[in-house]
Image (cartoon, rainbow over all chains, first blue to last red; front, side, top):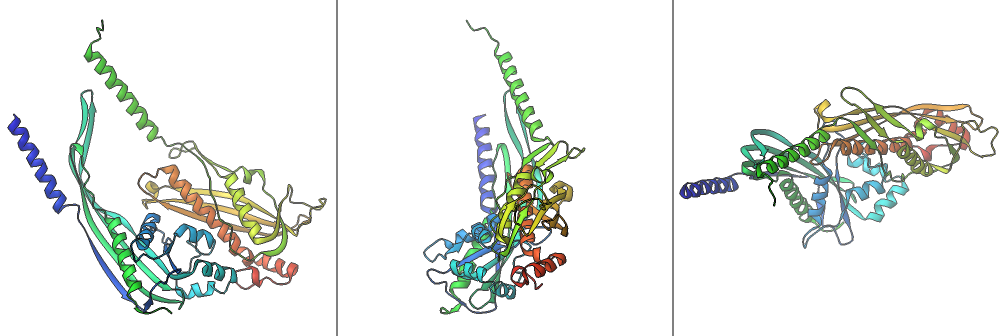
Length: 230
Length: 223
């Protein structure tokens, strides 16, 4: 009896190990297009990362924008990032979903308003990073059933699901009022949840990986732009 | 001496757990809804029009409650009156040199010196839930009717203003939080539309031209 129980434990452990190694993996494909050279963000200058939310069927998640901003500001070569809410509230109503400039030419038009120009100057903005995209569940299968009774409860089953994150960042050079380039990140991952009494979620952190990859690429894009300050 | 039957005690415990779970499930699945909207709209960054404006909030506006009692939406109440007043009280002082609350549209017998009286009304509110639209979004539409009166009570302009707000479905964000977030976006939208679109209403363009002589600095587009 004890032998059988040990065998079950070994099989379960092996299954979990295989799932941990082979499963809940995510892959990210980064694509970059440079339109114009970029200059390093100097000390005292900052960038602002904003989400696009004009589409009728999706909106870029606030937590994704916050994650990219936080990742950009971390590390020894971190860049000063203005939080999205602080910036949008300070510029109200010019950066709302309906009123935000859709291209860099319209950003130039906003600067004709002295009050807006002063706010930009106060923030010492060097680059605008606009991110458009979202994370969605593309497939799911399996099921986990849970039951509770007088003697206790538990779950049994196996569920798996696929998530896909697609984001594109447009970098606008505020000093030159040009589009510097675009960076896209496409992350796919499969998560598993085996349940033998206790459900154990093995999550592919698709959105988090897309965020980290996007932030690294934006940082590289800005810091290896090929020119020195303007 | 304790003579209680362990089986009986166990059954009682299981029954208790069952009823607690039943209560939790039934309260979790209830379709009724009660929201008191709270929102904070920032002060707009716009040029002030050098006019003194009175603002009149009628009872329907300042205590606005959306009620619906249908099969799909039983006992829905969404109170937004105080947030609506707070929104206009935040936006209008950025738009005009001076803003004061008035208790009537007709100020002919009043000593208040205002150039016009603005009176907002809520005509309609509509909501869409993610399960209804299969979109993964909570959506809100608020249709306003804004009226501008001269101090003698005659109508200068009357224009509709529709605000839209949406909020995506997120983990641990329930229906109340989803709708609340969408309403907040809609209130920001109406503030933006009012602040940027005021000078674009044809009758107001004319009124501004007659009253202050020019309006180019106070509107988005040339007037």
